[in-house]
Length: 161
Image 1 (cartoon, one colour):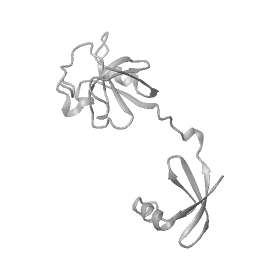
Image 2 (cartoon, rainbow, N blue to C red):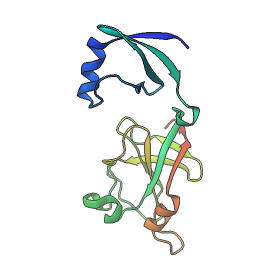
Image 3 (spheres, helix red, strand yellow):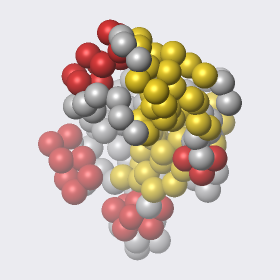
Image 4 (cartoon, rainbow, N blue to C red):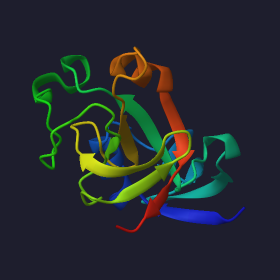
């Protein structure tokens, strides 16, 4: 462990703004570290770094992946039969809704779903979240297939256009 000195003049206003109050007991300084207050000083405190538990760590390569269908139950006001890139949805289509930072036309290989092109966006599709489109197949509705997929945390592979 190493000792870290924290300037309360910089940290306390941020913590108060976030509703965390003053530094007492154990508090999270960054997503990677937890800090335990040791000996208050004026105007700084000395803190000891404590390693974060391994089960709380999330790999940066893992994506939060869910499924959706073209109906109002999933798309609400945007259930018009078209994707965000203007594609008219047809029976048998497979595509992905991805965050704005991933261009339309990008191909992503998702384990258990396969390779599909990014054609759509979504209000909740931000950061490392993807939504896989499911259509009706063999008498099973797209919505039921999306629910069967559920939510998975998987590593995906980006393939050049």
